[in-house]
Image (cartoon, rainbow, N blue to C red):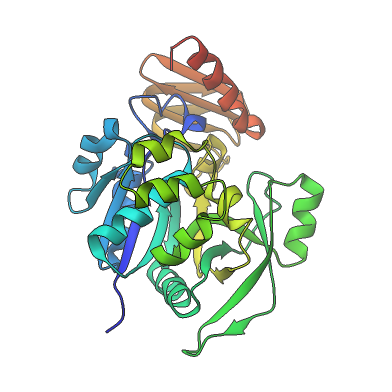
Length: 337
């Protein structure tokens, strides 16, 4: 009998680029964008192919996680320090509790349509068969500058007949010209979804800047381990450093709901290209995202994001939606986020 598949859903962040819908006490994964179910609840449901599902979060959000995902086990990391330390901690804890298994690691804020389970079970099988760190790559549909890219090598077939591609290179977020070249030359988007065995991942992480955390967890002292490492993404700390990374292409539609401009790609648009979440009136408006938990009217505008939640309102050109993080940085400095 093969080892079980365990899904680990990452739900410890805030989602600052979706301010003001997301706030320090109302993180993005608890929000609903469409049918009334939160992003976290939808992600946990998508992970139903796994034998067990864990949600990794920070202590302050644990109760909210239990409300949105009552059938998932909850892990709380000692300190939020990005996906590198988070996934090291998850691999160690799940191995303690479950034993030998294959992990599939999923962000809690993605939009997915299609056969998600098939791709992720294939990725888990490749990880188990090859003892490698598997990333799920998404074929680009546009020259996106907000994502990282992955250059694949030639396809390799496992003994069980599954095809994967050794990773030749990870690249950071490119400029427009580079993004166009990457798409033309067959690169994939780095979607932040992974599969590996705990042993393989901890082995590779031990040879990186996350090594002190791996050692401290083995000694039963997670607090010491988190204190010894900096905040770092798993892509930068482990995936870009390992020689054992493999790519499995996604067979589903995907979008990262990371910023307000993404809403126009996943929500229904009217005849003028406006995407509306909530109660809003648009008059002589075009290609605008309007999102609110109250009511918003927009008149005679185009290519804007107008987001109004509670006592906060944001207006920004849609093509500058990433700059919301600048607003959040200033609000945090003034303890107003």
